Amino acid sequence: MNASAKQFGKVAVMLGGTSAERPVSLNSGAAVLAALQRQGIDAHAFDPATRNLGDLISGEFDRVFISLHGRLGEDGCMQGALEVLGMPYTGSGVMASALGMDKWRTKLLWRAAGLPTADWAMLNADSDFAAVEKQLGLPIFVKPAREGSSIGMSKVTVAGTLKAAYETAAEHDPLVLAETFIDGPEFTVGILGDRALPLIRLEPAKDAAFYDFDAKYLRNDTQYHCPAGLPEADEQAMRQLALDAFRLVGGRGWGRVDVMRDSLGNPYLLEVNTSPGMTDHSLVPMAARVAGLDFDTLCLTILEQTLA
Image (cartoon, rainbow, N blue to C red; front, side):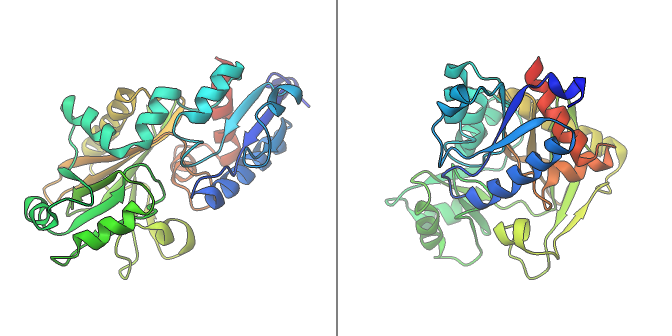
C-alpha cells in the first residue's frame, strides 16, 4: 500500500442494506470497492443487512464509504448511527440525508426559499382524486415521497386513474406525492465538493413512459447527453441552481440534483439524492468522466472528503 492509500486506514464500503434498492446498492458498492482496492486502499465490503454495526469497531475500521440507497441507508438513520460510533463517512450528514429522502419536505423547503419546483398535492386514501386531477392537470406524476429509483412511481395520463396510481405508490410509502407534469427534458446535476459537474440530459426510449426503474438500470436504449446541448449561460445557471438546492438541504461531500425544464426553458427542481448510484448506468460517474475524472479518481475524491 502506498503512503497516500495508507492515510485512509481500513475502509468499510457499506453496500446492500435492507431497502427496496438493495440490488442497486450491491452493484454500486461492488464497483466502489473494486475502484478503491485498485488504488491500494484497504477496503472491505460491509453489508449492514448481514453484519452488526459493532463490527465496525471490533473490526478496527477507520472510515465508511456509504454505497447504500434508500431507507435505513440514505435517509439519515445510518448516518446517525455512524455519528454515534464516531466513524467518519462519505456524503451528507443526518439532517440533509433525511430531508433528501423525503421529496415532499424537500419541496416545501425549496418553495419556502423561492427556488422553483413543480406544483404538487399530497394524497391519502380519502383524497378527492378528481379534484386533484383538475387542480394539477394531466399528466400527473405520482410517487412515494420516501423511495428512490422511481420505485412505485407512475405517470397518470387518463382521467379517473389517479386513485389507482396512489394505491400503487402507497404500497411503498404511506406518504404519496402527486406532482404536476413538466413538459420538457429532464436533466441531472452531479455535485462533487463545492462544484457542480456538467449537466446530463436524459432521453428515455420512445416506448418508455418516463425515466423509470427499467430505463435507469435495465435498458440499454436510454440516451444520456453530456454535454447536454444547452447554451453555456443556461448550463451554468442550472448548475448554480442545483448547487443552491443542494446547499439549502444541507448537503455535503457529493450528491445529485434532478431538474426538469419546461417548453419555455424554465427549470423546476425535482429532488436531491445524497447517496447516488455508482453502477455502470449511473449518472454521477458519467458526468465526472466528462469533467476529466475517471471512476477510480471519483471514488478516491469522495473518500478523501472523510479526512477533513
